[in-house]
Image (tube, rainbow, N blue to C red; front, side, top):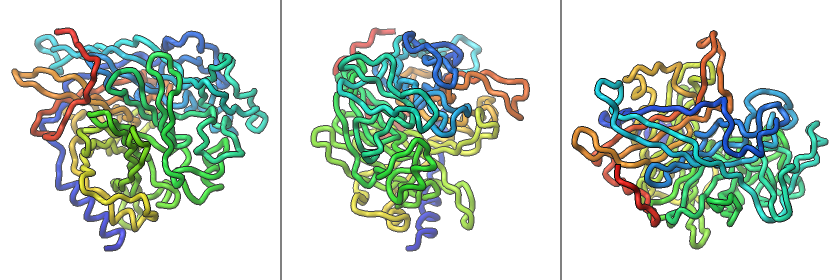
Length: 468
């Protein structure tokens, strides 16, 4: 079966599984993007003038931490506004994660939605390593030295700066200071968090309380690029295989039993078609052995058969030890100056599908791609509650299951979706010429057992949630 026919069949299967009507929006909330986070010692201006603790981008990754607690992960920092093309406009922002308290309670009578979400920032944790990391001297990108001013002996902070990569090593070198975190999950004991890195790509384990790196989980060499560079264009031009720059490991999931991580690439590897490729890889990492298995996930063609244009993947979350929900989307919507068209959450099952670790190439991967069914059409679901497509955030990137709720006498599960606002607290564009607030936003959907029969909540050994 040729590539086009295979992808057409997969698209038909996806379309046949229409999104579940009972999966519906039950709450929304936001947190101000103008404020600073709790890492006040990083508040000094970055190279581009933005505050070093600007509270933005927190929906790049979202993880449930039990009870009313969540972890939110910004990416490599404020770089949406051009200031230095030689460094891809990146800065010395220190990667971090935030601990949020998000209380979900029944709304008052007459409210537009059945529940009210009250989010609050409780803590900010900076990421660092006890061993020396490589920082660029800045001369090649017209910037100061990339070493963090907060570094101390045996405490070396990671950085969003793209030139903080040792040119003597490939992108799999774990001692580069540059880190572009995109996904976060917590372990069952609540003592550690796992973070996916787009620069490597890598998966790292950090101590939840201190932010110190504890372990590294290397992906197969085929995911790495041989030549690193401060700009994504230079990395793409200088390599024939490996991840596409700024489209590396985007999403991260942990199985409910805590035994395995699953990471997904945002775009196809260079050898599989690159940024225009039709199939991305999912990597399953056994936490006990570090062994990796790979699976192929088919992207949706948002163009035509003659001129295909494929979506990207932003996040995954584990339903059980073999099923995943996948956040697949276009780049359009609020923040992009355009109208959101395609933002879907798909269900896939890896049980019994072909392992593709020894395969390469678009045609070969397409033949082994896992089928998917539509679980949630986000744009349509928000539209039913009066949120116009031009006001749907372009970057809905955080996905996490949350606490159960009781609605109309029935116990229901929840799915939280968060946006990455690119650290831009305000947006002015053709659709919002007077300007509009661009906060960190959250959307909560409720679903029933029948919508997701295999759902198993993540097990947390430490939980003792107070009764509400």
